[in-house]
Image 1 (cartoon, helix red, strand yellow):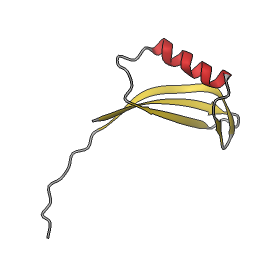
Image 2 (cartoon, one colour):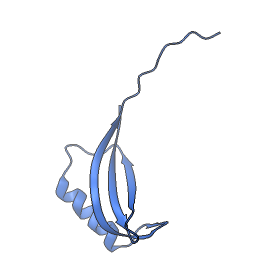
Image 3 (spheres, helix red, strand yellow):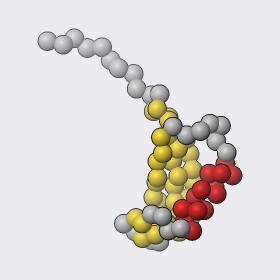
Length: 74
């Protein structure tokens, strides 16, 4: 079970840009997440194909479950 936190920003042309980080600290402190996103925007830390990140769109935890299937091997 792999978890990531996704920080979703708006860029200059209005498109969503997602930054994913592995192994988020839980429980998530929403105030810290918001503060980090504000800092990324203020410091112009990332540039996307649609320009600088200019606003916050969302943040979420994504969990991926992988269940192997046993199959016969020739």
